[in-house]
Image (cartoon, rainbow over all chains, first blue to last red):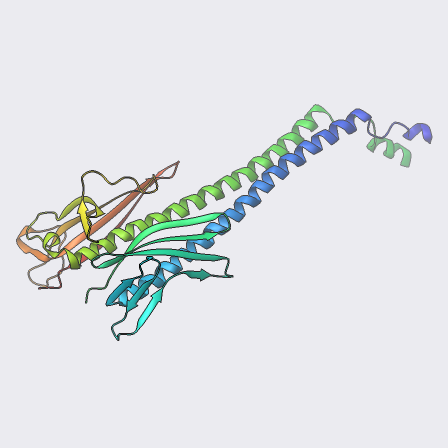
Amino acid sequence: MDNRIKNSGFTLMETVIALGLGLITTALVMSVFSAGLKNIRTIKNTQVLNSSATFFLDKVTYWIKQGKKFDVSPTKNKLTITLPDNTTTIIDKMTFGNSDMDATTTFTLMKKSVQLNFIIQKGSEILSATTTIAQRAF
Amino acid sequence: MFFINFKKHFNNKGFGIIEALIGITIGGLLLATFSTLIYQTIKINRVNASQIKATMYLQELIEIAKDLEQSATTTIFLPGPTLSCNNCYPKDSGGNTWTLVNVPPEPQLEGIFSRAITISPVSRDATNHEIETPYNFANDDPYTKLATATISWYDGSQNHTQKLETYLYYYGQ
């Protein structure tokens, strides 16, 4: 019985080569996998930023379109909107979701529009843009 | 019988070159597939992000046109076939006033986006007063203008263009 099975295992060379190939494959798979995970995280953050920016702009647009008078604070980071019924609403720093993300905005009053420059950050991802929202023609 | 099969399955031949090549090829294919998937995901995400920004910059042109609709009526609502502005871009001319200029060209936004707005005349059917296409000088409506905003950018692999149109109305008539 011993004679029949004594040489049935892997040789040292085979084992070393198999281990080497296994390690190289594992390293390759891990590097691709970790890069993939990192990118998935980045994509998720970017999507969250984009949807937050859309939400933020929708909200600001909603109020600006209704405003009949606008005032910007000296530091330019607070917009006071007087509505047709003479009540006011204020737009300044806005916090999203789990308070780990906020939009910092500076406002500039143009003749019949408001220009805003906003920065939203989540993790290492930053979305910054400048845009303009016109007042509604009364 | 048992020992014969045992030996058959556990001989000391090791892997042949064909087996090794097949193994490496399958592994390579799996890695290539996974890498391509990740690369395409990143690319689509980048294109989406650019698209969102492009839409925002494009909408800004329309919003600025809506500002000028109220604040610069004498330059926007020119009678006749004259283009109020051809391939212009907005500029803060000081005093918190927007103006549309086309010289010099606007620097690309974020280094990739090129945008322009054209304000063209509009004519209306004499009977039903609906807007005519194409423009007919005989039925020119000086109190309505067509604002066409375009933005184009190159995302590293292909060119993209988006267009938005809106009508501007003179409210002071």
